[in-house]
Amino acid sequence: MMESIINATVGGVLIGTAASLLFLANGRIAGISGILGLILRAGTTDRRWRLTFVSGLLVGGMALLNLMPEVIVAPSTRTVGAVAVAGLLVGVGTRMGNGCTSGHGVCGLSRLSGRSLAATLAFMAAGFGTATLIQVAMGGAL
Amino acid sequence: MTEKLLVFIAGAVFAIGLGISGMTDANKVINFLNPLGQWDPSLAFVMVGAIGAHMTTRRLILRREQPLFAAAFSTVSNTAVNKRLLVGAGLFGAGWGLGGFCPGPGVVSAVALGTEALVFVGTMLGGMVIFQLLDRQS
Image (spheres, rainbow over the protein chains, first blue to last red):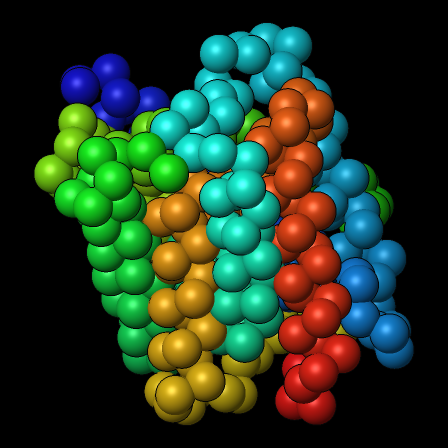
């Protein structure tokens, strides 16, 4: 548990530092769902930095895959069908609510945004509720 | 250093942070969100580290008049806490607890070409496109 806590904190510091690097470079907010959604939206004019950021995410992922492949783990208690529905919910929900764990959670809370606090409380409650419901109703697997 | 290189490094560091933190381990995320199972509360410290680092460095950056490669820092004008925000965040959270992925870790995990992460990213991007086509506000 102690090792997990240290890794979580160190990884979190890297995430927050990365968000600040982007902010220093072009003043933008590192909200992953917004970056992805706006790349895919017709009429987005400043798509280029978003594509660059996503290419950095993918290359960072490749570095992880090569240096510490054990950190990328698929959900063993969820069927592919459940994961497909999950993706749809995450895609629709993050665009409707204008943000996810990074945009509302990390960036929004860091600037003490009440709107982001409300969103973070809502998605945390729904996340805990859903995973716990699957535990109670289905024994933890779906 | 060019804007492109700095933005690219930001993306790469973000991904490595997600990996080290445990956020790309979908089982760990599911266990974090399920106190009645094999509860693993350690992921709460991702937020502690991320907010601590971003809040402090952001304040230092804001001493500058402008970013390195843009005319101004972006500001968020929307402060509304409304049904749309809460329903959207609720749907997102339900998907997060159902699949164990949020957007960043989904994309980063997809590089391993596992079925679950690829399916997740595919339906997530599809959901984003569908919502944006149906919705005039986004």
